[in-house]
Length: 137
View 1 (cartoon, one colour):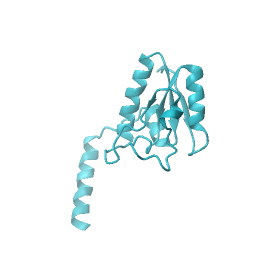
View 2: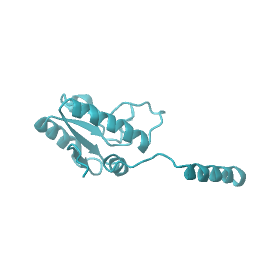
View 3: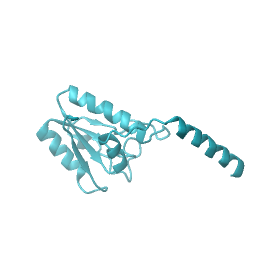
């Protein structure tokens, strides 16, 4: 049986109160927040993302917020790696990870430990499709 250390997940649409609740929980339970949002990770992408601002963090450590430039590559595989690293750091500090956000696929990739490595068959299939796209448009 695979026993994992505990974490809390808060998910839902933008502007339903996840951020406020994450702060309250982090204070009560000695937690740190990991953003599971596909936009909040980018610097200067504040409008429309309901991104938490530094004064709102109230001293609670936050991860995956304002970490990448807007032209940096980011996808579910990169999220999974960064979030796992953040969780290890949080656990090593004796804190509880609070994963907060509305990008459900990212949360599933983290919690279900989805393997994104490509098999040889997938590489061959991808090459065939890319050739087809080049030749047929």
